[in-house]
Image 1 (cartoon, each protein chain N blue to C red):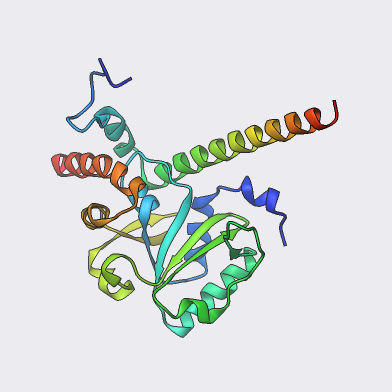
Image 2 (image 1 turned 30 degrees about the vertical axis):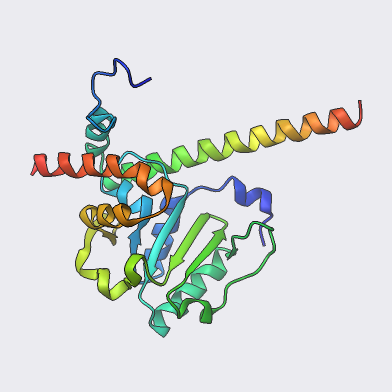
Length: 169
Length: 61
C-alpha cells in the first residue's frame, strides 16, 4: 500500500487511461479529460469514466483497482478499498490510486448509463489502443445542465473549442 | 488581465489558446494536462510544507 504523501504527488492521468485500456476494461471517458483529449485547453485533476456494468467488466476493473492500490477518496482520509458490489449501481465511486484520482461513475446526468452514451461517444487512437470518449457536443449539453460551478466556468471554453472544430471541418 | 487581450471572444475565452491546443494530437493534450497536474500538486505540496515548517518553528522557537 502506498503512503498518502506519495498519492498527493501522483498525477499520471494518461497512465491511468493506458492501464485501463490494457486491462481491456470497457468504459467511456467523460468529464474534464474527455474535453482535454478533444482539444479543450483546460486542466483537470482526475479521470472520470463510466463503465459497462457487466460482471466480466467489473471483474477486470477490480483487478486493475487492486494493482493500483485504489482506495476511496474521503475527506477524513480513512482507508477503505472498493469491492465489486460498489460498481453494480448508478452511483459515483471516487477513488484514489497510486497513479492519480479516478472516478468511476455508474451513470451521469439524467441517469444516463454506459449503454445510453455509447452513441454519443467518439473513438480516439491512443498509445496503440482505441479510447472512447463522450463527444464534445454532448459534454457541452451536460455542462449546461450541471449545477457544479467548475462545469459552468468551463462551458465557454468547450463551446469555443467546438466552434473552432466545426470551422476546421 | 482580460483588458487589452487581443484574442478573447465575447465570453472571455482566449481563442489563440484553443487554436494552439487543437493543433496538438490527443496524446500531446493528455501529456500537457498531466504536466499541469504534476506542477499543481508539487506547488500545493511545497505550500503545505512551508506552512507546516512555519507552524513548527512557531511552536519551538
